[in-house]
Image 1 (cartoon, helix red, strand yellow):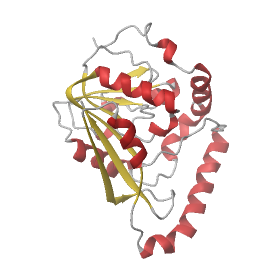
Image 2: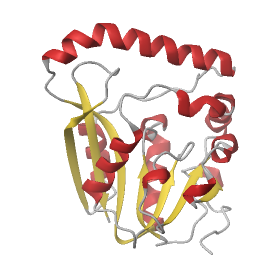
Image 3: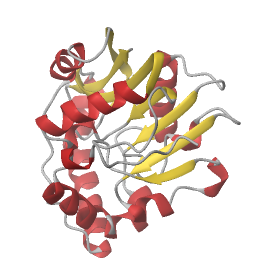
Image 4: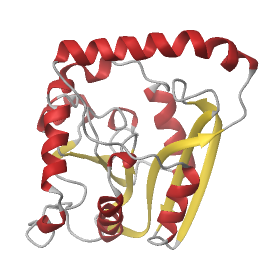
Length: 239
């Protein structure tokens, strides 16, 4: 068993922000997979797996996993675990993923030391404030095995194409309106603050926690809806 008691770490959790996150995302869980995403889940997951060299032998943890869209695309028979603070999100992780589901805050991971080869946090790293982010990274380093990898995605500037300039004024308002409509009918109102950190900022923070840090800008994976010059960045911390 990987589980351990959280007694030593529970004081590191910002309780007020945790409550806000649960209140924000619980009603949203039932329609979360219907939101229009700037990047297809499959392409996003594949980009993550490529740069991190994820294999079926790896033991993988996805923190702030939501409804498990990364877990869905992991290699078959891989040991996989999804951790999220919101129980409603975990209920929507498909059973066919064969993933272990754990309700937990990323600042207080309920796992033994050196338990995982790969840890991912996709689309959620900027939901943590500065203090929380450093605690998350401390926890990640603790539960990673030697030579383990931690992978996140972040905004990264890229060279826009003519299609970006032509389509952005038409697509983005539609996407924004549709997603706002889904939030309204689900009864959710996201009030928790997100933090603006780009690939360079996150890379510098990672350097203080990992032995080796690599940053990749994927110009073939665009985060449409984040601005015509906003591309897809991946940061990998190697223990």
